[in-house]
Image 1 (tube, one colour):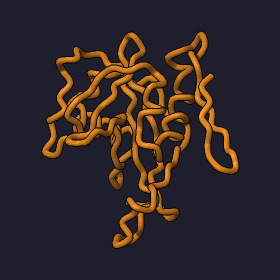
Image 2 (image 1 turned 90 degrees about the vertical axis):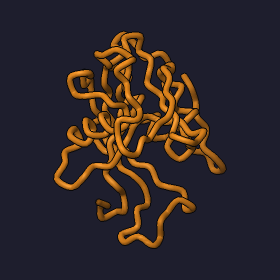
Image 3 (image 1 turned 180 degrees about the vertical axis):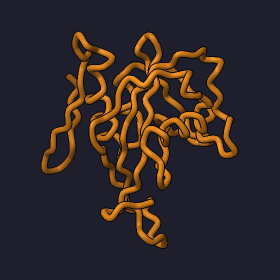
Length: 178
């Protein structure tokens, strides 16, 4: 399902533990790490897609997490040209995502990365809150920064420990960490 602008609707999942560390997962057979995410099926709400993806990719059920927040609107990223599938109609130029922040209520031993036919991840770890912004593949970094900035006040009501900000220059983007 691609929208009229060429973006595929998608959900992103940020899982946190009681120490405000985030679940960071390695894509199977690759040296690429990311948050769980996945497409929204036709006639499926973003929340329904999030719970389906959570089960498929991490093996967790709705009663094993607490939904703390969701981004207000869609956050978009474009795919680099080399990743575009030009033989598809319509052509998907990127993803538009709703991001969910969830607190884990279960034991780590309840996580199951191979609960679906096609596992997405083969390893995971807990990381500090801002770590993923500079570690995810470059074309997703701005969306990660936007999602984490928007959801940070939920985990850090007394003040956010640093924040990413994008600055555009003529030749390149520079990320500032405050």
